[in-house]
Amino acid sequence: MMEKFLNTITQGDCVKLLKKLPNDSVDITFADPPFNLKKNYNSYKDSLKVQEYLQWCEEWLTEMVRITKPTGSIFVHNIPKWLTHYAAFLNTKVDFKHWISWDAPTAPMGKSLQPGHYGILFYAKNIKQIKYYEIRHPHKRTRKANILAKDYGGKKNLLHPFGPLVSDVWTDIHRIKHDKFRDEHPCQLPIHLLERIILMSTDEGDIVLDPFAGTGTTMVAAKRLGRQYIGFELDEHYAHITKQKLEQEQSISKIGKSWVSFYLNEVVTLRNNDWESLKDFYYIPKNVEEIDTTPIVLKTKMSVIKLPRKIMNNKQVLLFK
Ligand SMILES: C[S@@+](CC[C@H](N)C(=O)[O-])C[C@H]1O[C@@H](n2cnc3c(N)ncnc32)[C@H](O)[C@@H]1O
Image 1 (cartoon, helix red, strand yellow):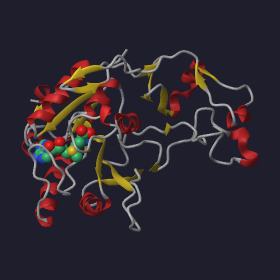
Image 2: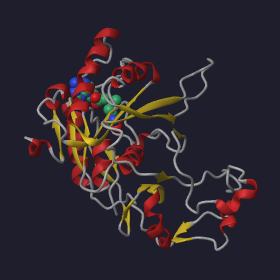
Image 3: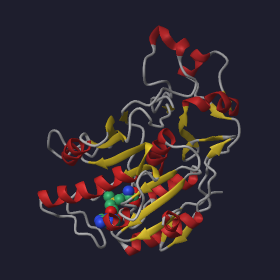
Image 4: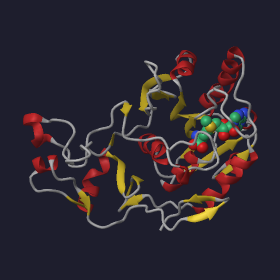
């Protein structure tokens, strides 16, 4: 039964489809459900009564927990309002690991406390068995002077050449703002957001499942990183776009033997354990303190450059070189 769903997108209701999968069968599950905010989806009405919405959420959350392996993780993306309910429910079933705050600011619109972040709940099926890797992101630099945004004072000699370990507040991944990078979907996530999650929680060949695939962000990220994937999506049109996108993707987001996440031409997430082999691919100042003013650069342009562009469904999609 599992093979039927593997490395493909299946159109249908995720609650019904999840029930077809065996217990403990996928490595991670990631859900980005409709937020019940009256978003304009093709075939799903995003406006249930609160109790109805929460009851429905408990159905797919229960299935996600059931099918995740004991070494696996469960991730759920939503606004804080709904995550408080999810957390209360998941706390009774699996082990809390982190509440990641994804800083995605909106323009100030004359109100205080405007929503400025989304949350990603991160649970372990079993905290004693979880597969988990430390990850790093590049140093944040000031826009004009290109020096480190953070003042390391007298501790510059301790700087990591690539950048710090990622904390539970993610400020370096922006929402997709430009239409040319979007499909016809109201709330598509950036691919490198999913790549970060996949790099910290899975190995090559592991299975990543997304019950609300949209236009396939999770699956594209999994494929680029050499993982297997299972995607479910209610809407036929979104499922079709996902299928077409997946056909264009290849598992080549790596440098040497290490899988990494690229955004444009830069590596934006890597595993801490991989740095020893990755560092040879960079020009790094001899004196580590110079990193304050001199960014490290890749010796050759080996990034997953998405050119040339190709028109698909009147939308531009990005292809590997
Ligand atoms: C927030 S969007 C996911 C976007 C996705 N993360 C992406 O980056 O493209 C939620 C998606 O869930 C789909 N959906 C709604 N109800 C569903 C159901 N019962 N089963 C499967 N998919 C469903 C909607 O059509 C929508 O595409």
